[in-house]
Image 1 (tube, rainbow, N blue to C red):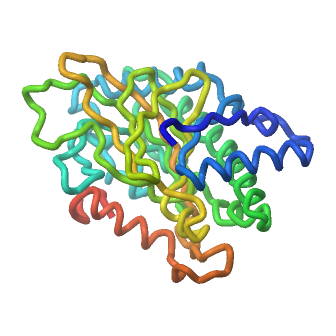
Image 2 (image 1 turned 180 degrees about the vertical axis):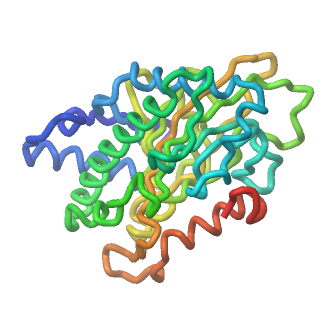
Length: 316
């Protein structure tokens, strides 16, 4: 497969309550094919509009363009939630064998009302991001229901382990990402905008600006482009879901390349990483015991330690 499939989610888009069984079953079959063959898919007609995405990107870009001293107080590690907050450029190495990634991010994991949010010069940062977080949560729940249906298992089997999204008991994260224009003279050997990696939890929703760079490794081991397609969301399987489904669904490796020489464009994206609750024990849903039970938080600990290189400065 040299291109990601595009699936119409209209029959179960946000706001739709009554769905014909045959329509839902058809959608389930299409999703299952995509998630077993490559692990990634474009969804169109989800109910999340482009104007909503643009509003969040506009708000987050105002933050990223602030001087560093204005962003530091909101750094990851300064909040009760271990993953909430700002991550500076080159702080992460999603492929630990490469230099730090040429991106910065703001993670929204905690929705607690008493934490400090950016406000100076960034407009309604909190309200814009929290609203979008909740929209992504609702859409992700719908995708999980269709995924369970596609496997012929209890329709709520995945949902039961995602009950605490937005609370201290769950690390699901809306991540605003900013890739600044690249200065070729300062790029280290082997450095990328985002190193090769797979995601950690259940599924990811990805919203891209129109600049390219995202690539997915298919089951033949070939990296293929995943450009921005207006009106669509990229959805992919993450590691714990692959384990949960005994490797039926595939958590594929992906990366973001540097722009071509002379290309000074920036890139933005929004990623909603849906994670099972911290205390959830992930076991093979087909009863095969292909993998031993694994506590969600234990897996996050190991992956974040790899990404940040240590257990200090807010990493696990």
